[in-house]
Amino acid sequence: MTAAGPGAEDTRRPPWKGLDTTQMPVFISYDQVERMVASLVERAASWQPDEVVGIARGGVVPAAMAAGILALPLSFLSHDQATGDASWIGPPAVGQRILLVDDCCSSGITLHNASSKLRQDGKECMTLVVVHDPETIRHEPDLSFPMRDLFRLPWERGEATLTGRAAKASGAVRDPRAVAPFVGLGMDEPLLTVCVAHPTATARLPELPSGRGVLISGVTETERDRLTATLTGTLYQDFPLECRPGSISTDKKSLARFKAETATRIGCTHLIECDAEQAIAISAHAPHLIVTWWSIDAARGWTIGAAAQPERSADLRT
Image 1: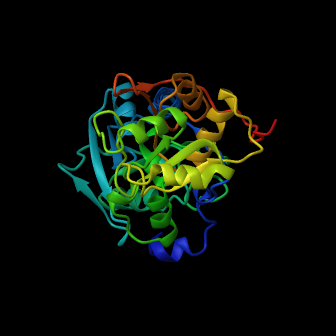
Image 2: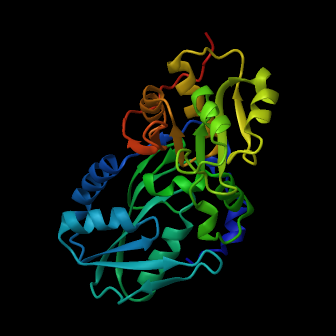
């Protein structure tokens, strides 16, 4: 079967769930992906593939995992979203029985087009995807785990940024820059004090990428005007500001959850927090975020890891 053009498929299938900013995603970590791939390739091994082929970019990591587990050669295909064509990156696969690997499927169009390319080249093909959405898929993989929740893989964080979502919604061919990092900064009183004393001191203050950052403050929404005035003339004056609703408590646990969920709603890939306790709690609430604890005294940051699934309750009120 010949696949219809990408645009034609996109107009008929349900929209990508990541466009709904109210959903807290289920984060699938690198170690979880490896265990899932190991389970799937155990089933693929009886088919006795000769070679693993990954679809770049998303399929690079799981394909490397599969090839390592099966001790097989590894090659890569590139998929052109505009034309639907698949082409080899480097030398083509020489094996006859190909295990084709991608990371995830929402529609399955990419996987279908790539497997069609292999079969046209006279190859036998089995398809493996770490996870797929059975509610939106049109071309189901041979081996995969179904997941109806919004899922997020470590290497696709940028798809949830504001520019990443806009590119996905438009259906246009995406520029890789659309999924570049987007950084949230916890803007509370200790950092505000330093901003006032050293408004342009880049050595002491964490920097945000121009046009790709947001300030998330534990200061209440009623004090927005004061906060905005305080930030005038500082490194952060041009960045959008999210303030704490008055209904959310000021204890550190509640503040951390507010910042984690706000960063998730906006689509941040990274978050910088100056309070160590909050930084750890944010990392646990939202493991898809790369969280940095920034020490104002040391004028440097440390990456925080607290790999726990976020709590399901979205109720931050006390």
